[in-house]
Amino acid sequence: MVKGKENIPKKGAVLFVVNHPNGLIDPLIVAVNNPRVQHFLVRAASFKKPLIKRFLGSLNLMPIYRMRDGVKQLGNNKEVFEKCFTLLDNQKALMIFPEGSHDKRRTIRTLSKGFSRIIFGALEQNPALQIHIIPVGLTYQNPSVYPSNVCLHYGTPILANDFYKPLIINSEIKRLKDVITSQMKTLSAHIPLDENYEKILDKLTAANVDFTEVEQVNSMITSTIISGREKKVNLVSFIKPFILLNSIVPWIIWKHTESKINE
Image 1 (cartoon, rainbow, N blue to C red):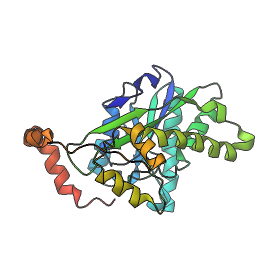
Image 2 (image 1 turned 90 degrees about the vertical axis):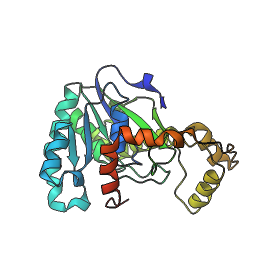
Image 3 (image 1 turned 120 degrees about the vertical axis):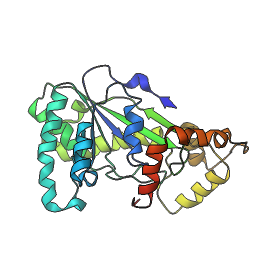
Image 4 (image 1 turned 90 degrees about the horizontal axis):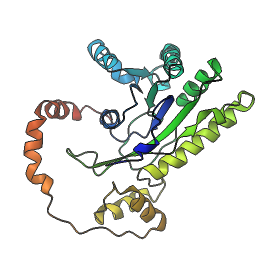
């Protein structure tokens, strides 16, 4: 299910800011349902092996280095950011996962500042450049199961230039993060990550809710009135063997690597 596709600018510099519940599946879901996105920023840990690094580079994936990758590695971001500045200046579209890592919990986590450094760095080099930020929400019915229904929801464009005020840059970064986070919490199923998280999740799961009906689910979470649906015969279970047969190679690779992936 894809919603809000009309919010994607047909031209101009764009940064798609996406939540990250399901590893390398997330950029694939966005890429095949987006006419604009051409370049992707992903965690540097995926680039450790030379062969994989070359393959990911051929797909226009670029590494973002974090503190956990080592302090010395952070300097590598300069070259990556410079490439991003050039791409945006050339009216291209980028995609980034600002939560920094993938996590299957149904919540929007704190956004890192990396995306703002890219946006404001590009505007510092070219103040006349207009850059739009599109918040994006991904919600899987069950991110641990293949195949699974998924909702991809594009939010309302945010003009980054409205937040570029060099004299008060730190407060503007916070304001921009707050605006984006607020949208992302409506674009994906969001359970606040507090002491009630597990209790709410258990109720939603027991009620057999359709998590991809994001607006309804978020309304239930806010009101604490949870109404599910009757369990029906899952037709997908009958055709699943044929789906797996059609995608046997990626499925074998996934089963081989699944146990090695750290949530």
